[in-house]
Figure 1 (tube, rainbow, N blue to C red):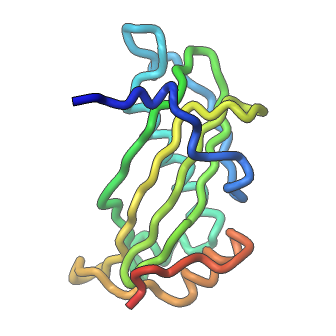
Figure 2: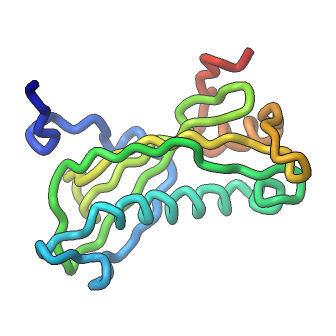
Length: 160
């Protein structure tokens, strides 16, 4: 069975796909025994950028238990190029689709100030009722806020 070497494949993300950015410094503690950023750190960078995005929506309280909860149910990451300490990353995130009870975010990590993609990933988040912990429909005000941040309509392929 042939496996793909993703580091030799063309990048799937470009800077122009993102309106929202978070800049993060690589910390020494995120470097592994091989001398490069450990794979788990990229998920932490994605999490930090997602959190900044939600804070910037002004829906943080609503999504953190007041009227809804959001939980990540799936997250994938493609590692495109190794990163060594010291480094600074620009992490772009975008809501790329909205379902009935969930939404999907794309993440692209670039060496700061460059078009060099080092990792990209996708996460799916489900909106839950804070009391029952069961999925609830995406609130229309959340969708409107996401579309304002993305400066356009977000596809809703499974919104039925």
